[in-house]
Length: 52
Image (tube, rainbow, N blue to C red; front, side, top):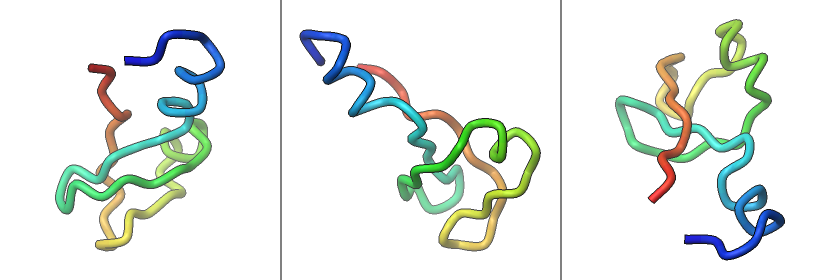
């Protein structure tokens, strides 16, 4: 996918996907783990974006 580290970080860092609505959200990983971040659908179920 990305050919160098800066592009990889820009595309993948701090991006999570809602498990219910499949919408992407940019958030701090520590807040996601603590459950303080909600997705647009109101759910707290988030997963990291997958690398292709």
